[in-house]
Image 1 (cartoon, one colour):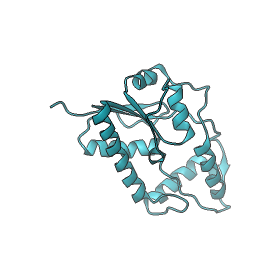
Image 2 (cartoon, rainbow, N blue to C red):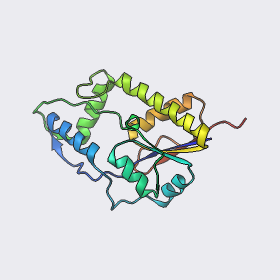
Image 3 (tube, helix red, strand yellow):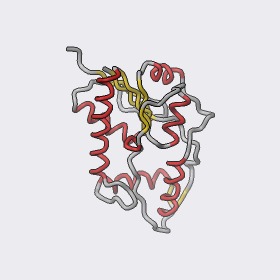
Length: 188
């Protein structure tokens, strides 16, 4: 059995902005509604990985669904909001103005430490990732191979749970757009 965790393609959205915390929250909503940048197409190695899988799983976010299409997937087997990216908390502060990257790091760290305003709590998100890993393992047992066109943070947590369930992988969880890692069960 095989599970491939692939990160979606590059989103079509400006990431070089300086914003306050309230504007950051609005930007996150735009990011979640954004599709992928067609000027950064899926590389051949990603297309080859996708073609080797019997079923494709996507989140309901446009960047996941559009990435599957860019990979040449004609039919998505499962499209479920369970597989969406982990929420990003935010606040309504007007000051200070920071880069999107600085706000992302700040709010992700605050989220792990318990701050979850406007977002799913960290503990609930980890539990959702565990359910995702279990669902992918079940799909692999039925179909033999599964491709998840997923998201950075969620893929990382799914990878941890797959490892804990005994799935093996030589690669690190994908961080770059179109990056992937393939998980296998031990031969018996």
